Image (cartoon, rainbow, N blue to C red; front, side, top):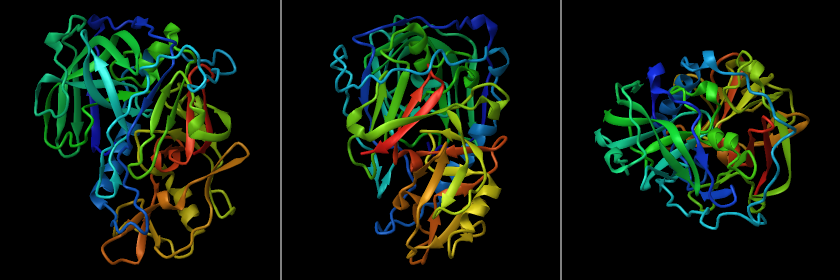
Length: 435
């Protein structure tokens, strides 16, 4: 997500009554949603695309804001524990009782050599109204602009046309660094993605946007993180489904294609064996990195490695589909780039935390270690393009930024290489080589 966010404020009133929503089930409880590509500043050295500095700096500030803001809902959240070893692998290709309408082809927002956004359709209200959202594992709230919104773009939702809309006076407000903003109220509604429905789902109903708030093809955002990180105090949409027993398995999985190619998808309650090779290896989540409360889909890592050399140092890796690049602690970034011949600190030419390296360099293996396994990043994903027109230096896709207590934010640059499974039942994440 390339929006530039520096402050998020939501006041949640006890009078709202956002209890755990009641869900209903359609079909088998497994659905597959085909998604086009998400905003990416990654360019390839042979593409002719120069590094987009403006977007890169916007992304970095957004990520910093996303992981340093205070979340209002953490104080009253019960600690989450794994219910058993993990959710079952229900392959969408062999699942007998799957909903045949669960697979939805989407348009690809691919512009000027860049994949602009991984997003997909969402239906809201009764009767259902169609809109689009960014599916973000790094946040936990759903917000959708309404037709009453001043300055909003996209397929906006008409609250007056829905018989299941329940409003409130609880304010919802997002403020951006350039003074752009979105404002509205917290409400509840019936929400469906790929045939799976949650009723009484809490969300932010946006009624005003100003400045450069939007610009992408998606109208809103659906957070796929944990309840403790939900600003609205509402149970996140996917976890509402999981808790209700509406899913074939309490997992969802993500496949991200490159360069506007078709095939990207979100599989809800399932995996898709056509999108990966080999076995899925799982790693436990790490609540110790966030004071014992599970906020993110993060797992311990020994760090990044270059060419099989020394580790950059351990961190807790947050797997975030709503972030484009990779952000690791500044000391780890310094150690990593010290291993690459010709790599330089590009703080003065690009921005603080960024590095450059010779465009003609033949890069060796760039890997992140989980357990005993090294997971590689494709060098073409690592290369963000020349610093400027005609420059022989290219910008690298691993950025130095100190976030929280030893967190690293692992975005699409890495996820595109590895089919990723998010297992709520087992509190773990799993990876297999993407096809």
